Amino acid sequence: MVLSVCGLCKSYSALVAAEDVSFQVHRREVVGLLGPNGAGKTTTINMILGVLSPTAGSIRIGGIDLARERARALAHANFSAVYASLPGNLTVTQNLRFFGLVYGIPELGRRVGELLQQFDLERLRDTKCGLLSSGEQTRVALAKAVLNRPRLLLLDEPTASLDPAAAQTTRARIRGLTMETGCGILWTSHNMYEVEEVCDRVLFLSHGRILLEGDPRQLPREHGAATLEELFIRLAREPLAEPLERAG
Image (cartoon, rainbow, N blue to C red; front, side, top):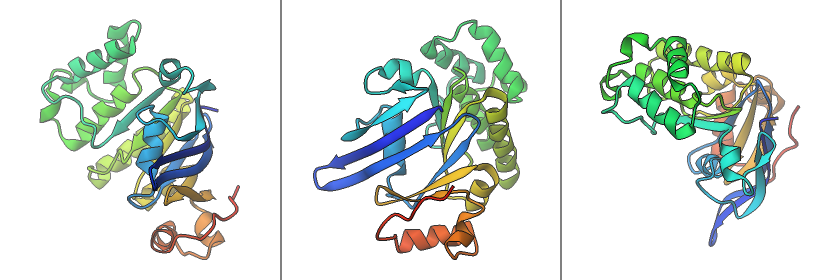
């Protein structure tokens, strides 16, 4: 198991951003964290990344308690998001070397070389990131996100700015990472086609609570919806009064 979240709560005075959120992510598993804007997805991710402190509950990354051993736990995680762009005035190689120094990667030159090859970035190695296309920037961001060989990879809308062909290639590359490295992935997306293609399991959040959990290809018919998108829209417009029993 790469991530265990138990009884996680986050409140700001009268506002409850997360309430009793519990789930797990296993090795070689891609879990989709779904919900409308304001559902609590970003709050949950920020607590897992140690950016926010939970009001209650616990988070364990690779079996390490985040609250007690923050640095050691986060050394096993990494993150990528379309809105968290890399410094545009640095080249691809400079960005990877910079973050490699931050993470304390041993044999950094060799590791950067491996990632340039793995993510088809060798011809762009001396190009400044600000001059890259959206698809190229996404590849660099993913290379940065696996620099430290994380057990847990958090991806927040990683294909949101990509055209369909680049998005398909990126999804295949991310899916391959789970098989090659054994990492687990927590993935947020509003693209339900993408979720069905990539995710082994999904969690539906609404008002900071998990309403449904299960296989994205089976959940719709289990709850009387034709598609995952239809189920998503229904839950976004009319959240269930109480969480349903989780599937699987």
